[in-house]
Amino acid sequence: MSERFTKGMARNIYYGGGVFFMLLFIGLTFDTVRAIPERENRDMLTASVASGKHIWEENNCVGCHSLLGEGAYFAPELGNVFPRRGMGNEQIFHAYFKAWMQAMPTNAPGRRQMPQFNLTDEQLHDLAEFLIWTSRIDTNNWPPNIEG
Image (cartoon, rainbow, N blue to C red; front, side):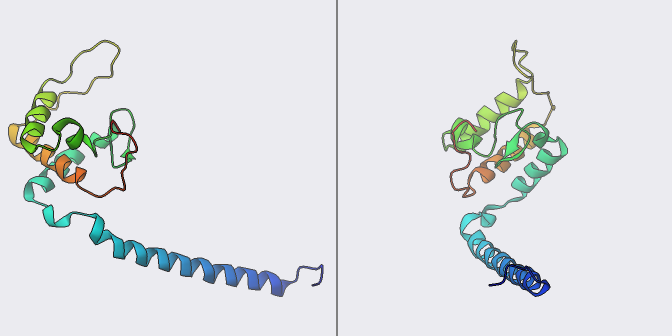
C-alpha cells in the first residue's frame, strides 16, 4: 500500500462510510418500529388518559418533573409513581394523588415547594389516570431506582 492518501481513497472512505451508516440507520429504525407494539400500551388509551396528558402539558409539569427520563430533574420522576405510591392499586393511588395535590404547597422548611394548581376532582382523576397509563409502558426498568 502506498504511503500517500489519494483522493480516490478518501472518496471510497466517504461513500463506504456513508452507505454503512445509512444501512445501520435503516436497520435500527426497522428494529425500533418492530419493537414498539410489544412495549407500548396504546390499547389502554382512554379519553381520561388523553385529558390527563393535556393537563400535564397545560400546567407544565415537565418543567419540574421528569416522565420516563424526559424533563427537568428538580422534582421526582413520575413515570413510576403509580407502583411507588399506589402499590399497584388504582383506588389507593387515586386517593393518594388527590390528597397529595390538594395539600400543596406543604411549606416544609428546606424543601422545594410544589405550587397549588387548584385542579378540579375530575382533572385530578384524569391526571392520575395519565400517570397510571404511563407507568404501564415497558421502559426496560427505567428509572434504575424505585424513587426515580
